[in-house]
Amino acid sequence: MFRVFVEPKSLVIVVSVVLVVWAISDCVRRRHHPFWIVIIVLFWYLVGPLLYFAWTRNWIGQFTHASEAARARSGGPRVAWDSAGEGTPAALQKRGAQLLRRGRYKEAIEVLEGLLEREGPTTPLEVRYDIALAYKALERYRDARDQLSLVVGQDPKFRTGRAFLDLADCHFQMDDEQQAMNLFQQLLRVIRFPEARYKYGILLDRAGKAAAAAEQMRLLIGELDTAPEFHRHNNRRFARLAKKYLRAHG
Image (cartoon, rainbow, N blue to C red; front, side, top):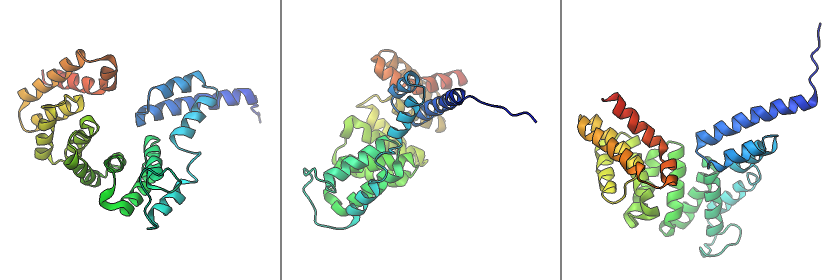
């Protein structure tokens, strides 16, 4: 029988390449900042991929979030929001936001739900918006809708209209097409979000209004053509989808 001997250095290189491919595909799928791809490629020899996973998976802080969530649910005396001490509302809000950014949606929900239960109606809109984003990431659209409705009800321009867009998208994802169409219409009168333009066009198409849908797709492409580079880059997916729609419908 033949034995195959692999040099340790060659094995490390193979592992590094596998980790690089895995990390880049994960970064694209989770829509993390493209800066991470640069880091992964520049420091491809184990360091870049491991740093990416350590940060986005929150390996460093995963051992502390459970205790913080437990304190949030403990029903202890409330502390002022501007207090930065461990276990305070501000600290828990920051913790939940960090978990959300790193794609740890279930942990973020655990922390923020405890905070919502503890603070009740006095919970800041930022907390409600963050937990709504976590719900959406896990396709819990009804829960997200409930929180976003409260946010938009108090401040329709919250996060320069992003909360309004997310609320409309929840109705879109739940196939509540009429309500989604109404919300997209309202939003597009004020802010030209490419995502809102595209999904509004899709809803028009489903309603049998193909010409109006195609007009929305053309508007989307035209608006992005004159937009700043970063805006075109962030919304290139919807530009591709709009062009695909127009090609499919002549």
